[in-house]
Amino acid sequence: MELVLNTFGTSLQVEDGLFAVIHKDGKQTLEAQKVKSILISKGARISSDAALLAIANEIDVLFVDRSGKPAGRVWSIKYGSVSTIRRKQLDFIYSPHAVKWIKEIIVKKIDNQIGLLLSMQPAEMRLTNIIERTINKLNDYKTKIAMADAPFLSDIAPTLRGWEGASTRAYFAVLSDLLPDNYRFEMRSQHPAKDTFNCLLNYGYGMLYGKVEGALIKAGIDPYAGVFHRDDYNRPALVYDVIELYRIWIDYVVYNLCTQRVIDEDCYSVNEMGEFWLESMGKRILIQSVNDYLDEVVNIKGVQRSRQVHIDLQAQQLAQKFLNS
Image (cartoon, rainbow, N blue to C red):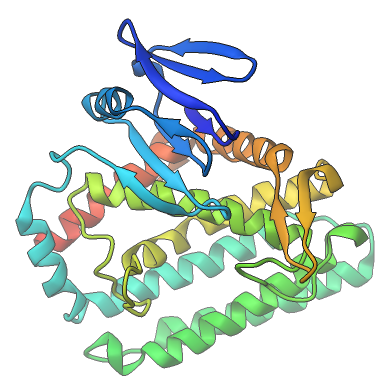
């Protein structure tokens, strides 16, 4: 389970070898072996004993900001102890292997978007036609990306970014058309969101950033040495590369919450600048929905595991790719 501390004044301590969550309504104890990760929002506290118990049991401890993105984390010093992986990672970034790898990721991202659109069965023929036209457009971008080639990624990165951006805009435009009226949006808006859908999507992606970053760290990979996304100060660029494989999972969860009209005005707030922010009720619904979805066992390349475990396994495979390139 994922332990989420997002209520002001809540604290996590240790009592008799167990985690003790203390809040205004009382106390709850949990065995460390049953906890996979701990998320701590502003206003909640964790004791050093609880942090050490988490480290001893290889439990991710993430401090998250208002949008759900990791602001800091605590992990074992055992993670990433093989420096050879990180040296080979840097070699990989500036090799022809990086071109093939990032093209495969972008193509897979577009395939995922097409798959989600194909699963839609709107009642209106107008929307069916829009989906068909958008899928054709996405396939065109996918073909262009697959055919692009150069010795080094820097030679074609701007072109790839342009095609990826255009395909993503087309995908979100049709996704908006498929939503109930009160959840539709004009465009993808990030930090801050300008509508309910993007508010949910931003927080869901924030959760996913933390899970991908944790998987990379455990595999011995430096999350800040990216291949495709631009390196900036304090920017985990490789997380932004790898997360493209999994964004569709958050898209699916958020889309379904909106089509089922689960999210109402009690779930978010809107400030005087028109910025949408998830509140406690919305966070509880989204976090539970995302975690339930990631806990589902699925078959990926012949391996039956939960989606969360697949993230960890693919991070390990990436570490091996770096070592063998």
